[in-house]
Length: 338
Ligand code: 5GP
Ligand code: MN
Image 1 (cartoon, rainbow, N blue to C red):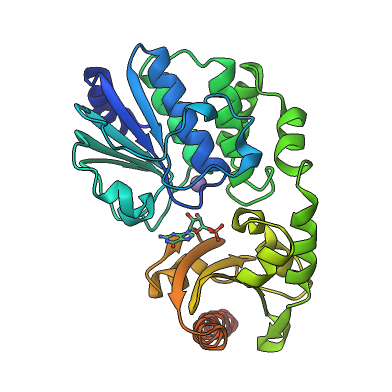
Image 2: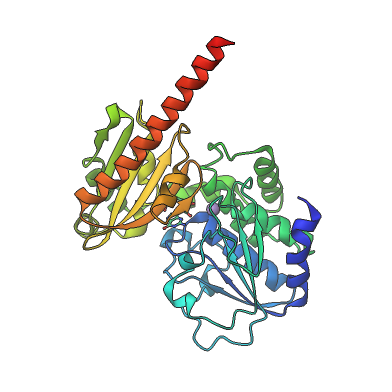
């Protein structure tokens, strides 16, 4: 942690009294954990804070301390000195209603997405952080907040989920170190794992079965594509947030470099999720469709029929894979001439 990068943020937080804390639509573990960790940290420092999410909280995160305080409207919220966005690369992902909230005060952007476009008045973007929860932890400690058990549970959940349970390449020594400190501060790894990964409603598995049956392979097995329709969600008795993690099954197949999931949002509109094993940076492909994310995990919204969106996205992925192979081949032949 370099002090000057953090000092401006700390200065603003110390001075402000009334806060809104916000994260992105379709919230997942890092979004919710970072939001609530920051919220509880601010309260512990004697500040007033409103934790806001435009979307409903997926029920699986109800166990997180502070989750009952989350609000879904900012109507009547005023005299705010500072608004802190966590885990969000683009302001429009904070939600359509949030964008009409004008009394933000100083707008702080705390995030770890490489594709972050620095939309805040003050931006703290740390792409090497495994989760926004890591950065929130550093900020709270630097601001002198006490890391309570409630904060530890939230920030551990943020790091645990964004590292894929400490499997992904972002699982740095720093991520392990912080997770260890959070366990010392009261986060219980097994308890959190059970609540996040071993407590799914049966409907999720019905929906997963339907989704797996849509698997298709392209690019000689290098790209695996699945889709979820609104009808499948409805008839399995599930909800859209239950599809979180499905795309990983596509990537987990032998020979697959990129897994793709298209989730129908409404007629002729899909949410795309991309997962790469590492040969290509899928955040670059997502950026072509006005989305973003990380090298291994990225997403975007796209309009068109299922066949149209599939064709467009697969074409870009094939291009990226072919360019990568060509680059590798020319590197190898250069090495050969040395
Ligand atoms: P997921 O596929 O799980 O929804 O998201 C994977 C990653 O891509 C996350 O880091 C998420 O923040 C980012 N992401 C997903 N959808 C969008 C989007 O519509 N816009 C941007 N900028 N990033 C997205
Ligand atoms: Mn994150």
